Image 1 (cartoon, rainbow, N blue to C red):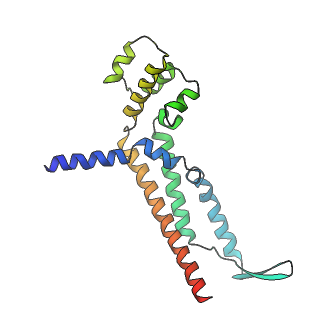
Image 2 (tube, helix red, strand yellow):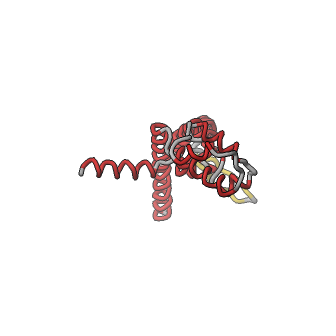
Image 3 (cartoon, rainbow, N blue to C red):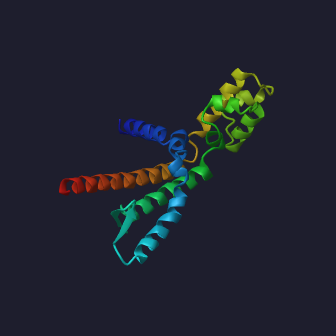
Length: 199
């Protein structure tokens, strides 16, 4: 009973952390550009720390505005979350199967004009010629859409759960990054509410 329950939990966790699910997060624009924040945040911190005054007066069209010369949120949290996103993205780039990184689905693969030999290259990447794919390899090179579609999804299914440790590392790095961003959002919402109450 315990083994069955553990197997079910492991299976659910495996599905949750598949390369296709990780790809959804890894392909978000702010995740792909997170390395830029790792470079930019320290520069802003240094610039703000050099300012002698905490508040500067800015005049626009004859009206004066006070501008706080300090970061409006916890830069440590933002910087750390950017690091987690960056490391997670690098793990994804280095370990995710090429077929999953290159194509979201069969339609995208087909629209790129790929042929069965491209599928064979993807399958060779993980020596995926087992089970139902073994039969396809023995058949003559076919570019019929039905055969190619079956082969495509067979290779995706086979490679989707490769590199267990890398998938878990990637998933955990993204999870920690999102948790830190959530903390940051809650802190800023709280700050705005307190400011509005005291105004």
